[in-house]
Amino acid sequence: MQTISDEHFQELISQAFDSLPKTHRDNVRNVAILFADEPAPEQRYELQLRHDQTLLGLYQGVPLSQRQGKQALLPDRITLFKLPLLAQASTERELQEAIRHTLWHEIAHYYGLNHTDIHKLEGKG
Image (cartoon, rainbow, N blue to C red; front, side):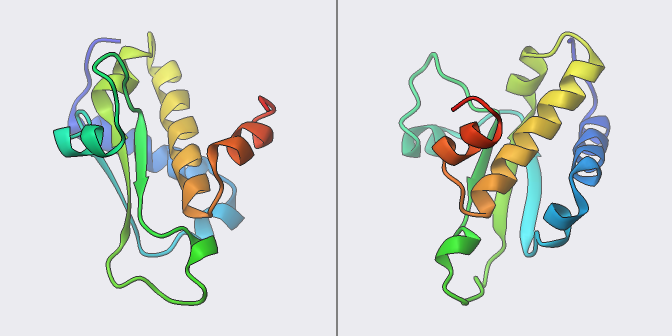
């Protein structure tokens, strides 16, 4: 896929969020869902990404399962990375699905699931 405007990419994120099960959407609170072209150098360093590795999305915050009833003061953040998502999609439909899957994956981290749990839910584990 070539390129799309930031506005259209944001629309696709909103559509992806709206397509998730209502019970999952309704319980997402105090979470900023953002996008950036690519991960920042600090994010790459923190995650120890090699130069040949990419990142489609990132959850930053305290998962609900670890809050012990406390509310975080700052919002958690889910960031989707536009250029890596575009690079893996040949069509807008593929991009929509990649955005939806990545957003679901990051929301699963918000709920406290690790990669093993997520892969089991996806039938990959």
